[in-house]
Image (cartoon, rainbow, N blue to C red; front, top):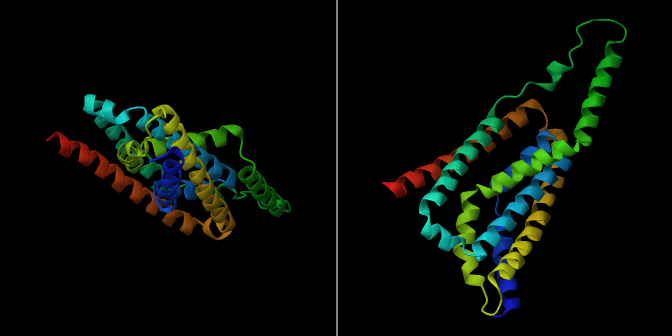
Length: 235
């Protein structure tokens, strides 16, 4: 297999994986609908950076390291499972309704004006998140991907098949990781734009509640499966 053949073959495999709905898409949807499109895109970049880290690590010998120190890998998976439980809780918990924050207690002639001002301020904050807000979404996205057991298994099993003799493992890891990085950015950014387009219909309390419960349930199940798999392997 030549260098170009390896890149093209991996692009097809990674592209197919990027299109399959999973934790990554759920995280981007959640960030976009509950915060803003910019924060959804920031989460997409964090997820894609996690992909790049896995690719490089797998190429430079992660599989060999896991074989030498299996307890370390189990520890990472347990932490990952617990983090997924944390995300499940944070997504599924009922948030305070924005309408409660906008109740005007004093009834006077300025009530409607103040109500409109609150709505306008809320909309402005949603559309113009701060750097810290975007950084938080980026970090959440990165950890979601880094602790995603599907991504870890994928790279540990697939990357060694695309290593090319005569090309350093580090170079191959970076090359393959960048391919998946670009594909992931394109797919997840599209998801964020689509979610933002329909956000007006999805930002009502009932829709957000359903999305939060579904997202939380998926992450809780995957977290439980991850931890159960570690326990089973140790029995």
